[in-house]
Length: 538
Image 1 (cartoon, rainbow, N blue to C red):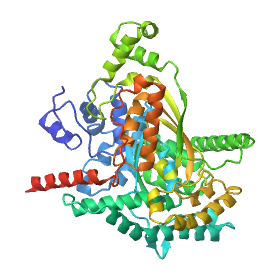
Image 2 (cartoon, one colour):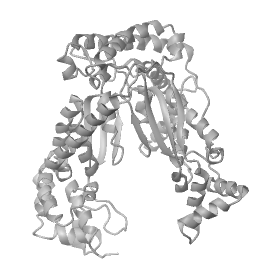
Image 3 (cartoon, rainbow, N blue to C red):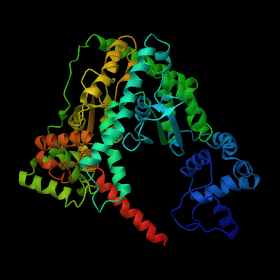
Image 4 (cartoon, rainbow, N blue to C red):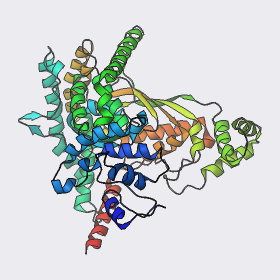
């Protein structure tokens, strides 16, 4: 471990969480400086703190003091410091300009008043970016601003012959959604009265979640929401290029705004998104999309309504053998081919014993088998509503690809709305949106998606390895989950059990139970945690 003089420790303490521990974090540095520092560190025999001192802070040629030194005393803003850091970054990284360097700095980006369609586009960037968004489960979307419901009045639609029908159909959906909130709340409260051991806070939150779950399918994809993204520079650069190349005008409008704001904190990492190379990338994406769409169009068919279901369309025929070879390989000093041969020769009883030992005695869903289970893959095709897709789309360690939103596969009507006598009212609200979608789809297939309510079914495929399947099926079948995606997780589990019963035998925490108020137990746990925090304060 390096030793630092008291003066050096005093300097380093401004930028490192510890000056003595081998494990520490950086602080009070612009992202570009962090990226440059880690890049230099990767090619130096010195420790990170010694590189920071010798080559950055104490090097008069680095210009470090002009960027962060005495920044607080001068009252200089982070944005001004970052602008100075960009030149610094470019100087330091001459000879270190690998693309991966842009993964060493990150930023938090907020995108507000964007459509639900836009959030899915941005969240498609699954590697290097962690997204969050305003939930349709915990927040009502019945508010108006200046007398208007909060949905995107998309520029191409509003300039088209469909504008009036679009506004009328969207307003009717929101009117129905808003009207049913108090009515359904009363019904759910009468059906599920508050028990003595449930706090008013937990009860109100649970009823609210239930009502939101039942009504969210009425909201159109144009519904405005807020989203947050934390990501590294490389991921943001690629996302921006995709946004610039999008066929949706909304995405192309958000792209320069996002780049401008990211440019204030990680400018060097995102500047190529729309420069010469970025524009070439955008052209490549757009040309490919149009060419593929043209070639695929001749195979299109008039799709009929489909019921919600999940099917398994592809899997490894030698899944057990692949998993066994991957289990054996780290334990033996042999080639991978030899491990595969050993697995093939292994008696069935021994194969089963080894796999069961690898699964182990799982005490909860967080205890998952290791990486050997990443060697076999499954592809599922799901027909389910867009609201459900929004939840399942968050999983990143898998591949998902969706079709364009449509109304042609029918609407998932919650049984509770039928039982409450609201089905006719809901279908009357859906009808204009359905008719308008079918009319718009012929001329504006991408923009037509905005009018599709979240409860209409769509199709997408999910490809995942077995280890992710354990995580996916157990997490998404939990009690507090939305019933729509709980069914998908349960169906996947059944398919895996049928396809590879031994490999799926360790999935002990898939929940098949039915609950009247899914969120209640989770809210009660929150009450306990709040009480514990209050005790600590006292």
